[in-house]
Length: 265
Image: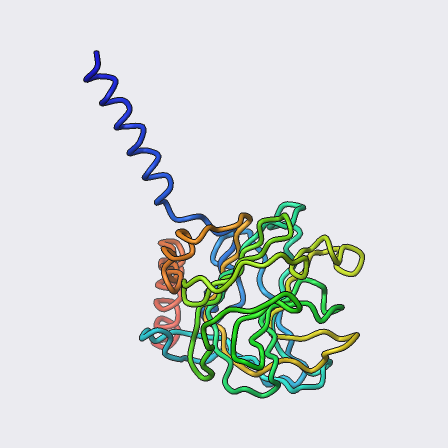
Protein backbone atom coordinates (compact mmCIF):
# COMPACT_ATOMS: atom_id res chain seq x y z
CA UNK A 1 0.00 0.00 0.00
CA UNK A 2 2.85 2.36 0.92
CA UNK A 3 4.58 1.54 -2.37
CA UNK A 4 1.39 2.37 -4.30
CA UNK A 5 1.02 5.66 -2.43
CA UNK A 6 4.64 6.57 -3.15
CA UNK A 7 4.18 5.68 -6.83
CA UNK A 8 1.05 7.83 -7.09
CA UNK A 9 2.76 10.71 -5.28
CA UNK A 10 5.80 10.43 -7.54
CA UNK A 11 3.58 10.43 -10.64
CA UNK A 12 1.75 13.51 -9.40
CA UNK A 13 5.04 15.32 -8.72
CA UNK A 14 6.31 14.38 -12.19
CA UNK A 15 3.10 15.67 -13.78
CA UNK A 16 3.37 18.92 -11.83
CA UNK A 17 7.01 19.31 -12.90
CA UNK A 18 6.08 18.74 -16.53
CA UNK A 19 3.24 21.25 -16.29
CA UNK A 20 5.64 23.83 -14.85
CA UNK A 21 8.23 23.09 -17.52
CA UNK A 22 5.72 23.39 -20.36
CA UNK A 23 6.28 26.56 -22.34
CA UNK A 24 3.52 29.13 -21.89
CA UNK A 25 1.33 29.65 -24.93
CA UNK A 26 1.28 33.08 -26.53
CA UNK A 27 -2.15 34.48 -27.40
CA UNK A 28 -0.55 35.85 -30.56
CA UNK A 29 2.84 35.66 -32.24
CA UNK A 30 4.13 37.90 -35.00
CA UNK A 31 7.24 36.48 -36.66
CA UNK A 32 7.42 39.30 -39.22
CA UNK A 33 8.14 36.65 -41.85
CA UNK A 34 7.61 39.11 -44.72
CA UNK A 35 4.12 39.77 -43.34
CA UNK A 36 2.46 41.64 -40.48
CA UNK A 37 -0.03 38.79 -40.05
CA UNK A 38 -0.07 36.74 -36.85
CA UNK A 39 1.18 33.17 -36.93
CA UNK A 40 -2.03 31.95 -35.30
CA UNK A 41 -5.17 31.68 -37.43
CA UNK A 42 -7.87 34.20 -36.58
CA UNK A 43 -5.57 36.55 -34.66
CA UNK A 44 -5.20 40.16 -35.85
CA UNK A 45 -2.30 41.43 -37.90
CA UNK A 46 -0.06 44.20 -36.70
CA UNK A 47 -0.70 47.64 -38.22
CA UNK A 48 2.14 49.78 -39.48
CA UNK A 49 2.90 53.39 -38.62
CA UNK A 50 4.80 54.50 -41.71
CA UNK A 51 4.15 58.20 -42.38
CA UNK A 52 7.26 58.58 -44.55
CA UNK A 53 6.58 55.40 -46.58
CA UNK A 54 10.12 54.35 -45.75
CA UNK A 55 9.52 51.19 -43.70
CA UNK A 56 9.32 47.61 -44.92
CA UNK A 57 10.63 44.06 -44.81
CA UNK A 58 14.25 43.05 -45.31
CA UNK A 59 16.43 40.00 -44.73
CA UNK A 60 18.79 40.21 -41.77
CA UNK A 61 20.82 38.00 -39.45
CA UNK A 62 19.19 37.64 -36.03
CA UNK A 63 20.99 35.63 -33.35
CA UNK A 64 22.94 33.88 -36.11
CA UNK A 65 19.82 33.05 -38.14
CA UNK A 66 19.01 34.56 -41.53
CA UNK A 67 15.37 35.67 -41.53
CA UNK A 68 12.92 38.38 -42.50
CA UNK A 69 12.59 41.41 -40.23
CA UNK A 70 10.53 44.58 -40.40
CA UNK A 71 12.57 47.80 -40.54
CA UNK A 72 10.81 50.91 -39.21
CA UNK A 73 12.09 54.26 -40.47
CA UNK A 74 10.74 57.67 -39.42
CA UNK A 75 12.05 60.79 -37.76
CA UNK A 76 11.85 62.52 -34.39
CA UNK A 77 8.76 64.57 -35.24
CA UNK A 78 6.03 62.73 -33.30
CA UNK A 79 3.60 62.62 -36.22
CA UNK A 80 6.34 61.21 -38.48
CA UNK A 81 7.61 58.44 -36.24
CA UNK A 82 7.45 54.89 -37.53
CA UNK A 83 6.53 51.70 -35.73
CA UNK A 84 3.74 49.18 -35.26
CA UNK A 85 0.58 48.83 -33.20
CA UNK A 86 -1.96 46.18 -32.28
CA UNK A 87 -5.52 46.24 -30.92
CA UNK A 88 -5.42 43.84 -27.95
CA UNK A 89 -9.11 44.12 -27.01
CA UNK A 90 -9.80 40.70 -28.53
CA UNK A 91 -6.56 39.15 -27.32
CA UNK A 92 -6.18 40.06 -23.65
CA UNK A 93 -8.59 39.83 -20.73
CA UNK A 94 -9.96 43.12 -19.46
CA UNK A 95 -7.30 43.46 -16.77
CA UNK A 96 -3.69 44.63 -16.56
CA UNK A 97 -1.98 41.22 -16.43
CA UNK A 98 0.01 40.50 -19.60
CA UNK A 99 3.52 39.96 -20.96
CA UNK A 100 5.22 41.19 -24.11
CA UNK A 101 8.34 39.52 -25.52
CA UNK A 102 9.99 41.33 -28.42
CA UNK A 103 13.19 40.82 -30.43
CA UNK A 104 14.45 44.02 -32.01
CA UNK A 105 17.35 46.39 -32.48
CA UNK A 106 17.69 50.15 -32.47
CA UNK A 107 20.12 51.07 -35.21
CA UNK A 108 21.63 54.05 -33.36
CA UNK A 109 21.23 56.15 -30.22
CA UNK A 110 19.37 59.06 -31.81
CA UNK A 111 17.16 60.49 -29.08
CA UNK A 112 18.71 59.55 -25.69
CA UNK A 113 15.34 57.99 -24.83
CA UNK A 114 14.23 55.33 -27.32
CA UNK A 115 10.63 54.15 -27.05
CA UNK A 116 10.06 50.36 -27.08
CA UNK A 117 6.33 50.27 -26.37
CA UNK A 118 3.53 51.92 -24.46
CA UNK A 119 -0.15 51.30 -23.71
CA UNK A 120 -1.49 54.89 -23.51
CA UNK A 121 -2.47 55.24 -27.20
CA UNK A 122 0.46 57.69 -27.44
CA UNK A 123 -1.27 60.05 -25.01
CA UNK A 124 1.34 59.77 -22.24
CA UNK A 125 5.12 59.81 -21.94
CA UNK A 126 4.87 56.79 -19.63
CA UNK A 127 6.23 53.76 -21.48
CA UNK A 128 9.09 51.26 -21.72
CA UNK A 129 12.30 52.81 -23.03
CA UNK A 130 16.01 52.50 -23.45
CA UNK A 131 17.15 55.42 -21.30
CA UNK A 132 20.13 57.81 -21.69
CA UNK A 133 22.26 55.37 -19.65
CA UNK A 134 21.45 52.68 -22.24
CA UNK A 135 19.39 50.75 -19.70
CA UNK A 136 15.94 49.24 -19.95
CA UNK A 137 13.56 51.56 -18.09
CA UNK A 138 9.86 51.96 -17.33
CA UNK A 139 9.36 55.71 -17.11
CA UNK A 140 9.13 57.21 -14.55
CA UNK A 141 9.65 54.28 -12.21
CA UNK A 142 13.19 52.94 -12.66
CA UNK A 143 15.67 50.97 -14.74
CA UNK A 144 17.93 47.92 -14.79
CA UNK A 145 21.69 47.26 -14.71
CA UNK A 146 22.52 45.81 -18.14
CA UNK A 147 23.67 48.12 -20.98
CA UNK A 148 21.70 47.91 -24.21
CA UNK A 149 23.90 47.81 -27.32
CA UNK A 150 22.78 49.66 -30.43
CA UNK A 151 22.96 47.97 -33.82
CA UNK A 152 22.50 44.53 -32.22
CA UNK A 153 19.37 42.46 -31.64
CA UNK A 154 18.11 41.98 -28.09
CA UNK A 155 15.14 40.14 -26.65
CA UNK A 156 13.27 42.37 -24.23
CA UNK A 157 10.46 41.01 -22.07
CA UNK A 158 8.13 43.04 -19.89
CA UNK A 159 5.63 41.36 -17.58
CA UNK A 160 2.78 43.00 -15.69
CA UNK A 161 1.17 41.15 -12.79
CA UNK A 162 -2.04 43.16 -13.08
CA UNK A 163 -1.53 44.62 -9.61
CA UNK A 164 0.73 47.62 -10.31
CA UNK A 165 3.97 45.65 -10.53
CA UNK A 166 6.09 45.25 -13.67
CA UNK A 167 9.20 43.15 -14.23
CA UNK A 168 11.71 43.59 -17.03
CA UNK A 169 14.17 41.19 -18.64
CA UNK A 170 16.80 41.61 -21.34
CA UNK A 171 17.91 38.53 -23.27
CA UNK A 172 16.16 36.41 -20.66
CA UNK A 173 18.08 38.01 -17.76
CA UNK A 174 16.24 39.78 -14.93
CA UNK A 175 16.60 43.60 -14.93
CA UNK A 176 14.07 45.01 -12.45
CA UNK A 177 10.82 44.65 -10.58
CA UNK A 178 9.06 47.97 -10.08
CA UNK A 179 5.91 49.28 -8.49
CA UNK A 180 4.36 51.17 -11.41
CA UNK A 181 1.08 51.93 -13.14
CA UNK A 182 2.81 53.23 -16.30
CA UNK A 183 2.16 50.00 -18.22
CA UNK A 184 -1.43 49.47 -17.02
CA UNK A 185 -4.17 49.64 -19.66
CA UNK A 186 -6.54 50.75 -16.92
CA UNK A 187 -4.50 53.91 -16.35
CA UNK A 188 -5.47 55.15 -19.84
CA UNK A 189 -8.94 53.64 -20.20
CA UNK A 190 -10.53 56.82 -21.55
CA UNK A 191 -7.71 57.56 -24.01
CA UNK A 192 -7.22 53.96 -25.12
CA UNK A 193 -10.54 52.06 -25.18
CA UNK A 194 -9.23 49.55 -27.74
CA UNK A 195 -6.27 48.76 -25.47
CA UNK A 196 -3.76 49.45 -28.21
CA UNK A 197 -0.08 48.69 -27.79
CA UNK A 198 2.18 51.00 -29.81
CA UNK A 199 5.72 49.84 -30.55
CA UNK A 200 8.62 52.28 -31.10
CA UNK A 201 6.52 55.44 -31.55
CA UNK A 202 6.49 58.00 -28.73
CA UNK A 203 3.66 60.11 -27.35
CA UNK A 204 1.87 62.74 -29.46
CA UNK A 205 0.89 65.04 -26.57
CA UNK A 206 2.50 66.21 -23.35
CA UNK A 207 6.17 66.31 -22.41
CA UNK A 208 9.01 64.17 -23.65
CA UNK A 209 7.92 63.99 -27.29
CA UNK A 210 10.35 62.84 -29.97
CA UNK A 211 11.81 59.90 -28.05
CA UNK A 212 12.26 57.12 -30.60
CA UNK A 213 14.82 55.53 -32.91
CA UNK A 214 14.80 53.75 -36.25
CA UNK A 215 15.30 50.04 -35.98
CA UNK A 216 14.36 46.51 -36.95
CA UNK A 217 12.01 44.02 -35.28
CA UNK A 218 12.18 40.25 -35.75
CA UNK A 219 9.36 38.97 -33.54
CA UNK A 220 6.69 39.94 -31.02
CA UNK A 221 4.99 37.51 -28.64
CA UNK A 222 1.98 38.51 -26.53
CA UNK A 223 0.79 36.60 -23.44
CA UNK A 224 -2.36 37.05 -21.39
CA UNK A 225 -0.51 36.27 -18.14
CA UNK A 226 2.45 37.49 -16.16
CA UNK A 227 5.32 35.19 -17.12
CA UNK A 228 7.62 34.31 -14.24
CA UNK A 229 11.40 34.45 -14.41
CA UNK A 230 11.80 30.76 -15.21
CA UNK A 231 9.30 30.97 -18.05
CA UNK A 232 11.02 34.01 -19.53
CA UNK A 233 14.42 32.36 -19.23
CA UNK A 234 13.20 29.16 -20.91
CA UNK A 235 11.57 30.85 -23.90
CA UNK A 236 13.51 30.25 -27.14
CA UNK A 237 15.19 33.49 -28.26
CA UNK A 238 13.06 33.47 -31.42
CA UNK A 239 9.70 31.78 -31.96
CA UNK A 240 9.78 29.11 -34.64
CA UNK A 241 8.54 30.25 -38.02
CA UNK A 242 5.50 28.04 -38.80
CA UNK A 243 5.85 25.61 -41.67
CA UNK A 244 3.52 26.14 -44.64
CA UNK A 245 0.40 24.01 -44.32
CA UNK A 246 -0.07 21.00 -46.57
CA UNK A 247 -2.99 22.73 -48.28
CA UNK A 248 -0.93 25.84 -48.93
CA UNK A 249 1.89 23.75 -50.39
CA UNK A 250 -0.57 21.89 -52.63
CA UNK A 251 -2.09 25.15 -53.84
CA UNK A 252 1.35 26.59 -54.46
CA UNK A 253 2.24 23.47 -56.43
CA UNK A 254 -0.92 23.74 -58.50
CA UNK A 255 -0.07 27.36 -59.19
CA UNK A 256 3.37 26.37 -60.48
CA UNK A 257 1.87 23.65 -62.69
CA UNK A 258 -0.75 26.08 -64.04
CA UNK A 259 1.91 28.69 -64.78
CA UNK A 260 4.07 26.10 -66.56
CA UNK A 261 1.05 24.96 -68.57
CA UNK A 262 0.36 28.56 -69.62
CA UNK A 263 3.96 29.04 -70.64
CA UNK A 264 3.89 25.90 -72.76
CA UNK A 265 0.64 26.87 -74.53
